[in-house]
Length: 262
Image (cartoon, rainbow, N blue to C red; front, side, top):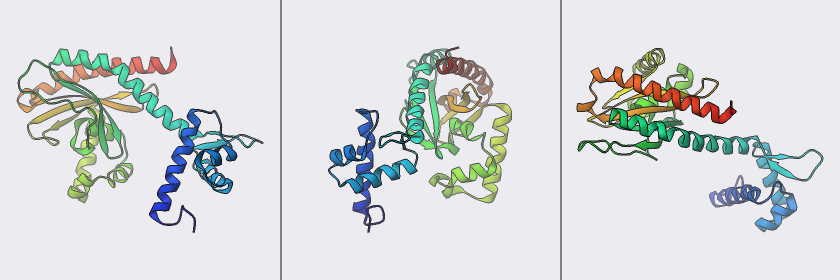
């Protein structure tokens, strides 16, 4: 019985070894079976199985006519994703601060992670006694978040159902009628270009969000303003949308420039 198909402890050992193997690429451009066996303290056959598995999954690539393995497309894609996320965070920060000063409310930069929305940066106004708190690093079900609904809006009904299949929040409220209503709401968000949350995520807190795009017009994040409901009634939404769109366009322009240099 192999570690991959054996007991949970054996599987965890294989995962640990695979992660340690990938970390070897921090110190070297490539690795060989003999390097992996020596570093991990395993037999050559075990090292070869690990390298083969990671190659088949796309995390490694074997050089043509060589015993050397290098980073594969999946690993490079993952690195690029986090690099882009850090770049976006850095680029967006001054725009978040400016928007926060302009509207005197909390401003959040959020991305979609599965069926959740993750806040990667947050700037909170300091002039009100009643305020919402910074939510940097916090996740929430996308369906109860203005930013989350904005980020879900490009997906087809089939894609949406697939994404929501992993959501505990959706499982607790899901009905055929509920899915139809959500799809209608997302269609409205697509047509008007912004989303709102009137207390769905947290009672007494309202939010409005617009998307941020890359150069190919792919939605990569959402920018939102959140405030106590008494300061964000429905009649304030249109004014905030204008400010948000202006800030989003500025972030998009700077981000695209950083990716192309032109």
